[in-house]
Image (tube, one colour):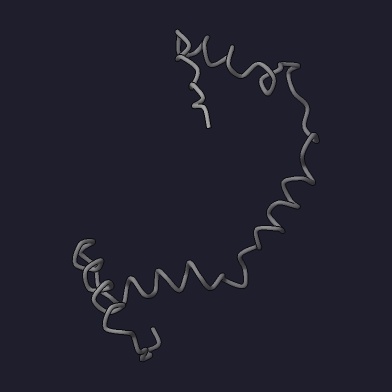
Length: 92
């Protein structure tokens, strides 16, 4: 690992200490985790690239002729039994 030094506000440092204590980990481990979340790895495809890949294969596979995308509720009812009550909408 490469050692580096950062400056945090008192409030940031306290939040970091609190979370580290709660998780049972070090502040350094939390900072590394945050960097991994914010700064993508060069080998990691972007969200738009992942979306483009998914779209490029959509519809490209043979199916058994089922209509799961249209009748998913019926299939779930068959698997799990009774259908749960549909969610109710509240008036705005």
